[in-house]
Length: 173
Image 1 (tube, helix red, strand yellow):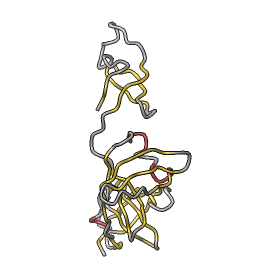
Image 2 (tube, one colour; image 1 turned 135 degrees about the horizontal axis):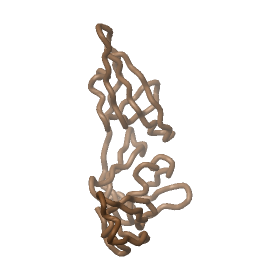
Image 3 (cartoon, helix red, strand yellow; image 1 turned 90 degrees about the vertical axis):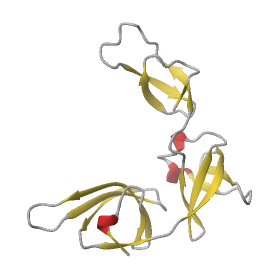
């Protein structure tokens, strides 16, 4: 058991037989009263995002996750497929559980698959990802009054704001 004061972004815990990953954490204390801890969490089994509020004296059950190095292969309408680098198994994870990292994953990317008691629950991608620009708005020399940006589309379909000098074919990090 850990105190809710120890929860931070990325911490995984269980409550009422559900697995949660902390996405955002805020601690507030008003006057002499006890502190209130608000966390935005994602249910790792259903993919739902919700907010939970705790008193500073509450405790939750922390869990231990197993991480395996894997390679992202491809995705279809329902699942994303990976290959374990040690056993060469090809596990699949439902797409709705990976909505926050899927726009940053490219074919053959090395990732870490998180398991809890043998159940695949999450994927951790590298901190930086190199993506190729496939679509870009034109930029003009007079558009530089203050740090101007433009909208580009990268190879995974993600829309990103970039400086004006980025063009189609460039790789951004």
